[in-house]
Length: 258
Image 1 (cartoon, rainbow, N blue to C red):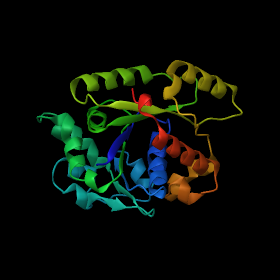
Image 2 (image 1 turned 60 degrees about the horizontal axis):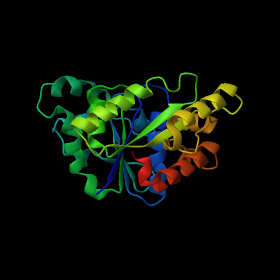
Image 3 (image 1 turned 90 degrees about the vertical axis):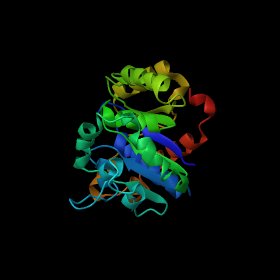
Image 4 (image 1 turned 180 degrees about the horizontal axis):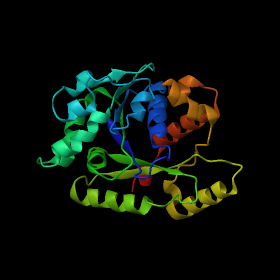
């Protein structure tokens, strides 16, 4: 069965979707069959791999509410072994439609059970909030990757997310583990960034991955072309750092997941 990882941070603009898209691409290039599930109504992960759901096309929303077989919603990307269940703005309605149903936190888990046998890894891009959709991603996941932007308020909100993860472990998903924290948007010319890295490592210890994702022009350009940076510019610093991060995630020891 696939290992299910969600990329989560309720704070927006921390590189969550960039990480979801590019780690998925790196896993696929490494020969691991990978499915990315876009659970954000903004659908940035979907457009980031060149897929924009049209009005008459199904997305994760239709699969969640049971109108379509999840396998029929899966779309291939230009990287062999990398597929995606795309999102659309329709997903906004799921929170309203499913809120009063029983087991409302388990809809994504049920969906994943129908597709996980076909993949080595399932990655979930969660929305920048701690609402219904993120609850579903954390209940469905086995582990969590948490991107942290290298800025002054880097740890703001992380403690709230950690408390949420702990509550979910106690109530819905006792096996949920923190895979690790990823430092993103690092600018080596900025002294604050260096201070933030030191502060985050001091507070979170060995749960912080060694690979740091920098601010990189090619990395920021790639989504507008609908491509992971590994395809857009494989020689860029952004591509090499995400490859290094993917290797580190795959090599992560069990003791990191605590």
